[in-house]
Length: 353
Image (tube, rainbow, N blue to C red):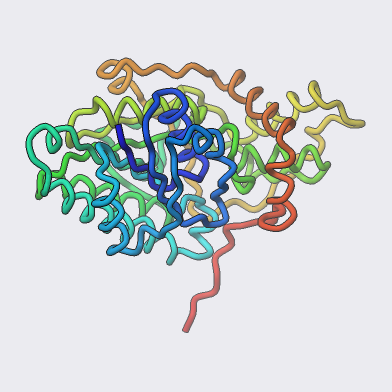
């Protein structure tokens, strides 16, 4: 079965590609602009099978997206391409609006043009999975969980751009009948995660004896999802999700940011002992503007309707993640040297006159 995965050389996208190709035996065409957060090494195992090919293209190019989808003739389009780092969206929101909103529009229209020309069983089988985030829901209080019916209340330019793209995907289903399914996930972590995000940043800073930055008091809460569990969920949703529906994907692993950082320190101290406990490197820094207090996903709909279950809890997933970074310095060391060395991101840029 032929599939297209946009953003397939990035963190979550590459986990999806590896699962589809290496575990399920699918043929996959990856569309990726190959920005700073993409890495061809992430899909090397999939490419080695001969059933995966990389197309270096920008989803903001509407004509090219139409050509690719028409030529590849996919049964499914799994749309993961996005600018995704909240901090970067604060200092430079334009790329987020262009890629996440306009790019999604282009893919929906390209898919609609292709799907409209299909007939019979081929038309019935086609699916467009739009992959999104729990950040579109805004912030939770001390109690409760995000469900598929939670009203949208985005706080950052990133989450606002994703909320807009979610609404576009649903509108293309309701208006044009395009067979769309939407997913919203909690915070992912795992192998191949670009080191601007909390967990890989802390792992690498701790290994190098650098400060471990924690925003505010470190009491913001996130629900953590191991990326390979997420990849399995997305394959299930694309194959069996009900059209026009949303499925929330969460790991049921709520932790404060400080608890996450402390856990990383403790695992590293056990695996790679240092002269001093790495918790001493924790440094509290000024909070991120518009920092949501708590996210937590209710994944009951996905679990009950499609039978998905997370295989990793936070402790087992974190240990696997840390071990991967210990074993793959050749993957992350060049990134630390030439792409992102761990500097603070997310400071608002000056308004241009």
